[in-house]
Length: 254
Length: 375
Image (cartoon, each protein chain N blue to C red):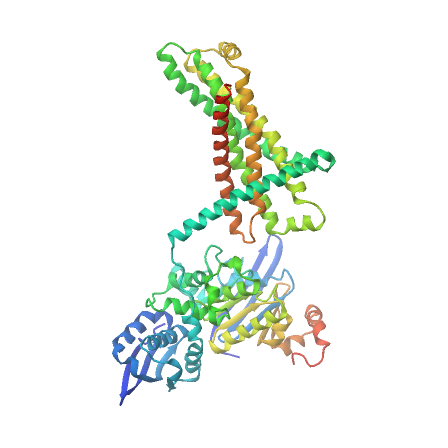
């Protein structure tokens, strides 16, 4: 798929002490894509996500998000860009002192000027789009189950109708049924709302089920990049062992 | 990005009208969308169709606003026909229509209800106090158990707590009580000097410091230091399921975690109070020599004559009770942390406040008690 470039990492190098995580890594993602980012532990998937959204400065190179140089632009441009993407952190990172509705309302209150009769239904719509029942809005994050908490985190991430949505391991710790419902939710957000989705995941079912493009990180670089068929055809040993458990099963993910 | 302004107009067709949406209907334009809809408010109730041919962009926010205004005007959204939308726009408008009931059905953002909060706070306070009482009972039972089987005492943990709550607290205890001694002697000296009764400063400082100030101040420091630490330590262990692990391994968290802390604090606090006594008198001695012409030699002589042993024994004797209260509150608040990180902060704050209040209340009770029995 080609189209407008929304995410670009250019020559990104990252080091923690003597450990090299990224070594002049390049990555480009186009609008409307649904990309899964995979790789072994310590290959810097989450770090790359944090570098793209401007939370962690790469040691070399830079990242562009929606046309903004996240490490060179001035604070005003950055603030404008931050309104145009959403991020779901691994454990939700909901504000524990606010109920779910207030969590979702926080970015809306902060960034938008709304007609007074729109705020409440808008929060309700966000809850509904992320698959939460209306009465979940009045609950505190500590009163929610793990799956509900992740849904609430998505509701907050899409509050401002972002153009790009990042998710860090959205299905980790969920039962398979809830995890599949989550995959459907991501497909829905991507297809029906036209949101570009970038998801870090270890969930093979997510890869087989919904990812249109898979990017594999390893040795500080992008090892493989393409559709499921293209990536599984790659003879990199890590990729082979990663997929081997599922490849032996017939009629799956083809 | 320059988007065309949102606009809308009504096309009347007999009794029915079509709502034409033009330009960009997106969340950042919501206020102008609202104004555009306001300008056609009178006619909204007759709308039977929406025409989206003139839209340059629409998102769920813009679509939601249009549906809500129509609904408010009395139109049933399900009966409205959609015309002229391109595929993407039509899908979004249709999607929002299907979620409209759920969106509007969301409960209101929570109002601030003073009376309800007051009631809940009172009930919570009652439950907390009852809980402390229950926890005290648990500690007592464990203590009896410990008397019967002294070997079950976790000595390693006990000694670790001696270090953390006792030895490490000495510098701050010395500093604070020394300064209090200085200030106290100085204030007394200002008064005593007017009557040429400088030497009586020793009597006043000795009584006040050993019987009241040192126990109270040291207990306050320990409540802030060790009480808070107990809550934070046990609370974190609760959160990371370490306490559940202890229980699963067939051990009792009370024996492994709580009893060593309670015992350590009850032993350590009187010792710290003694350190505080000495430091406080030391501070007084320095100021007496510097400003009141009372030499250290005279100071110590007068101390022997004026300080009735009962005073400092009472001061030291109160300390274990303070320690028991602080340790019980600290441990219990730690064990009752719920599973979100926020509650560690809340409980730690609460521990410090509760233990300081309880220490002062206990001290007042002791004062009344000793006055009644004439000590």
